Image (cartoon, rainbow, N blue to C red; front, side, top):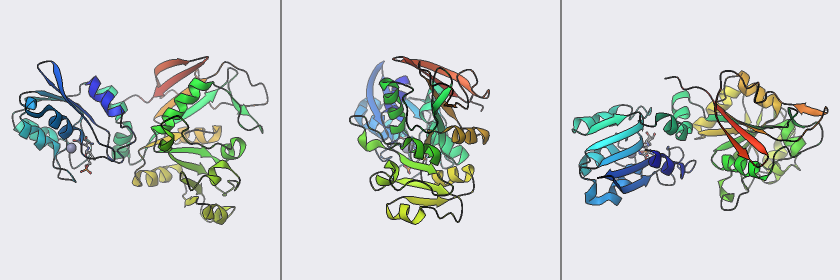
Length: 349
Ligand code: AOF
Ligand code: ZN
């Protein structure tokens, strides 16, 4: 199952709105077939693994990260394909909440006399499927807050634009997280102060930039900002309150989409309807605090750098010691002189 999860991660963010599922077929202790949901979402993982296994699939065991589907969509149901291929056993990590599937995939397998086990490596698979599962069950994207904090608990220097808190390995990790996200969001204060581009600039991943979203109540995003200037290359959405004018029409002429919504929940619902399954929130402090206050955060990636910023810094909304208590610490990583702590909400269900 760990191999199936690892396979699924290779297409994470590239199968939207379908989940990236991994499938490994084992016969007499030997892997005879592997599949991962294809780019764009189809074909699904299982028929590809079965095709690779060929006749060896008969009597074999399939390990699959999500309950095989039972519906006739653009492809026939994977559960039927598994039955037809004569597999003896199917091990599943997570049940599929999609109402067209939920429980029916399991039933097709069991009714055909296949031995079915569910829940293996559940926590790891659930993390790999987090965007899909959150969008399906909560009608909003999975939200990860990323924040970098100095040793003296600051996230920036007032009025000074971007300053380095973490080093190049941390920067790479952030760009990888961006590449795995469907959308990335900042407040207009950060967009003005830091003039970030919010794209992925890692060799080979340049085309994996997420949609960029700015919370910009009064449409103050500068026309000279990198975001506005690159809006035709990678989409930019400015989220304003109803009736705001500001730079609106000029931003629109540069390719920025203006979206009027009243609150964060409504914004996330709209994004989910457009197929956004994973959202990364990159600041600043006020935006992070409002997502937390609205209980719209699923995971926190907190980077702590070794340097000090001093008393004219912008205080962090929280630090490793004061992470909101509903979050649990998942793991730490050392990235050169920086530390990354990852927190998530405990799974209830
Ligand atoms: C699987 N294996 O690899 C994936 C599955 O639009 P369709 O017809 O492709 O169906 C989308 C649904 O298929 C999606 O909501 C989820 O239930 C399932 N995804 N199922 O058996 C796969 N990606
Ligand atoms: Zn399927």
